[in-house]
Amino acid sequence: MKKALLILLSFIALGANAQEDEQVVIVRQSDYKKPRKAPKPDRNVENYNAFKFDPFRMAIGEINFSWEHRFHEKATFEIELGPTVSNLGRNRFYTQPGDGMGTYRRNSSMGVLASAAVRFYPLEDYFAMNKLYVSPRFKYRRYNEIITAENLSLNDTRGYSDELIFSFNVGYQAWLSDNFAFDYYVGAGIGSYFGKTYNVNSMYDGNTDTWIYSWQPVTNRYARFVGVIGMKVTIGN
Image: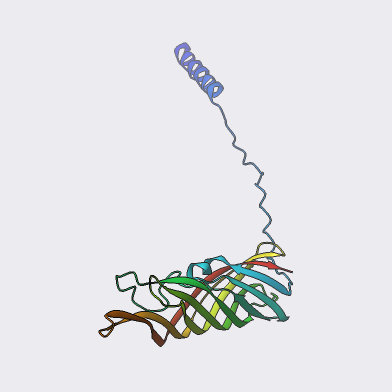
């Protein structure tokens, strides 16, 4: 009996020690939540005029300035005007280079560009000049070149390329502030081209044993598909 009691007391003592060593850990979830940043308000400016410059058009010889004016809640018109510089980006006159004798050279010359377009801004709850727009555009562009004869008794002459283009553009005007925006656009259309330039023509005169030189005109007329892309830096008020 004493032995059974002793064994029972030993088990009770071991259980008490086990309870003292047991640790209870309670993990409490924090109620703290990181505050969300308030979304920036969607800008919807009410400007009536915007003045623009398209730096990327310089890659094809255009110094392109434009003015956009809002005349309706959903519509504006835009006018472009500026000089052109020929022989940048490609050979616009479709002529062969010199005959290898160094008889003449072609120099870039200033021309002109002008265009007119109407823009429609279809998105609801936005004034004209904001966000998505579609725009039919007519454009006239002239590139000029001056052709100089070297070591020949010929006066300088002038070549030109006249271009009339109709395109349908789609764009997006994003205002970063009430007065500053970027205007991105792409489009496609048809262009009609007429170009005139000159080559040196040489003819041997057996009577005088001399070569006679003259300007020989070369003309080109054609139509082709036109792609349009650009980005205008915009100041509005």
